[in-house]
Image (cartoon, rainbow, N blue to C red):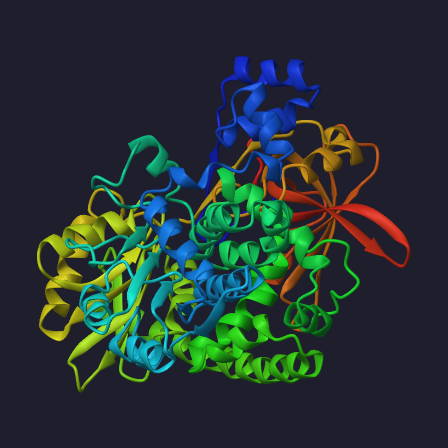
Length: 589
């Protein structure tokens, strides 16, 4: 009998309110499985379920519910109507680049004179003096930030001294003092600009491009009301790109953005997007998936900022020249290849440090290296979380400034941003921000050891060093394999797009009989199986990636419990419903 030799993975099986499940089944004629998945995602009423399953652009929320919106619209609309030059200042990641591209193209469509700019990573994060000077040199009288600016107190003061107004659109947390801008649109504001606290909270899942979109939606309504419907649809491709790549929860209005934005991507008229889709053989796709953004389009755009010059990605998203788009895409492909190589190196070096005795008992791994690019270590940190099952913070060290900059990734119940808030209150941090699962942070060299110790202390209640098993969240147990039908798959399609807050569902079935097992793939590290699920007359094909070695101990005839995701598979004109295994363990029935 199969006996898992690796540490057991915990299965966290959801226990939804059965009465609420039954109510959705009756009201919407759904299968109990789909109704359970909705309840697990916090969708409890038939009204909420209808909105979740059929998000409508016509139901976009009133942009004026965002704090700071009215003065922002007043100033931007005045600049457009009076033909002032507007300087759009973005950021160097995919969110900041898509936000800047959206602002430039949307303002141009309203007849504005616009100059767009995204800084290099070496220029420093946020609106800096360099960006203000560029605006001055361009003859701009208004700077509109996109995905930055809410902490740029000194730079906004500099702009004001030069006679340049600033409108900030940003989703990051403000510092203790807000910049003296003529308007600041930010869902984290908690001052007198907040009309309704519940409203402000409802927008805190927005990324920078979403905040910019809402601002330009209101500006379009003010300046050219007849174009508002066209605006709302035309720019959702950019909003979806930034929202997915910045790992925002795909819930609430974000779900609407991404659902319609993925369709808009497939039919986008932007030459840059067409060039990227063609590179990934997605040019004829009827729709793009969130996975396509997360693993293909998004990393390609991010490669520019991570490797030095985000302007390449910005130009790609704003060019109207097909040949230029093809060349820029080729340049980004080369950069992305180098990015992957560097990330592999950083991951390897960090893994060596993680194995040192001094880190063995650390509840949070805080590791640093001088040659680690700050733009590349976020993905590496995520890789180490998967390897060591604990929160990880990787930091690149700047010797000249005696300062660390890096990225943090959470694990389990440990809330990364709350922990950083405590460290900031202790005076340890420079700039930082993020959410429960991921964050960016800077630390002065003198605070490094104290920072490591404080995080270790803060993780005492959530990270148990005696049990660092990974956890799989299981949505529902499927006792009878006959429930896995094509009708169910059609219903699951309606729950897409998947993402944070709406993860692809995982099922579990107990007492599964192994029919056959073998290792496949170029490196023989994939497990291919045929399984007999209870209740089913035939067998199901299954695959377990990165676990080919299990073939040495898992034998035909073994009875096991499996956690898995059902996936359609098309091959040689035939379609089958395969199982993508997440875990296998000896059966409990």
